[in-house]
Image 1 (cartoon, rainbow, N blue to C red):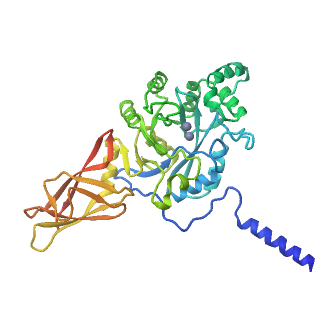
Image 2: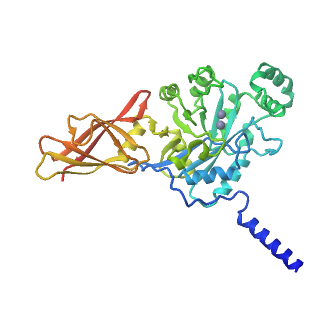
Image 3: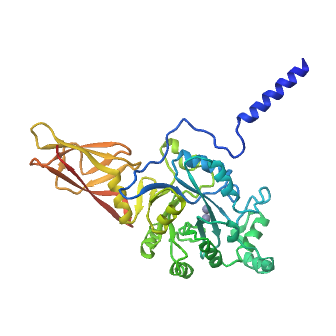
Length: 414
Ligand SMILES: [Zn+2]
Ligand SMILES: [Zn+2]
């Protein structure tokens, strides 16, 4: 009897162990529909990307498979887990000799699923240049260099910044100081030698820029001049920088928005309550790695942050045209009131301001078009038209700081 009980118990516990899935697997979620959805443009596939996230392999709090699981739920097409190369707060518990490890783990977790996981790292320095992400890299280990002979110099540098480092693990801080001795220009060059796409992270971050104003310093200008810096975060997590947007426009940098998530996406962005992580929409020929990189290097991006889009006119206009259309337009009986249905194929709740001479029977000039939905307008055209043209200002699509998009919707009248 005792033996039988033991056997049953062993069986129970071993089944239970397996039923929790193996390490690195992705738990299923059949309960929510939170995938981010944007239509393809006439010319390109619209890919949802998050190119800046963290795991326990630097200062994040989850294993890389969780990043992949979240991304799959969020409909993210392209994901990078970009660990700090120099700042390794878990190094006592999770030694990280191969800096490609989080990518390897994330890629394995993705398995055959429909997500493109790319290799990337965060080159982490004080300002300048601050933090720099390199994605589509081939070997993260080549982007970090530790020279023990620089120990004294590193400690002298550290002594100047003890206030910033207070409360942090001394070994972690010592390693950061020593690894920071490698000139950042050389690390960024090494990323470019791997044909990476390189962008400046959170240039508005108060810890590195106390006034919160993103501003190019000589080192950034030099990197841009040499073609070594290709993008800039205009949005990072909860932060938006109008100045960074202008820097992107003035210097032909890709506008990038990322989650920079360290905790859980669900905690930070509450998708179950209708929230979403910031993403960069990339307009690419296909979801292949080379094609996505080409698109980024060609600056074909629009950011979706909260309920606003940010992007250059040449990228924004095709997205708006793919997202908004007049589905139907027909006159009500013998009236001159045209019943119009405006359709929205995107996840943005569009805020349109009427710029036509027409007035509406059921709305003032501010028209809200629901995400993935339709808005009815009764348009008073005075005379019966064959072709309707409605001019709008899109209040939550910005093509430059304080510059909203314009959009004309046209439809033959039935
Ligand atoms: Zn950073
Ligand atoms: Zn980061």
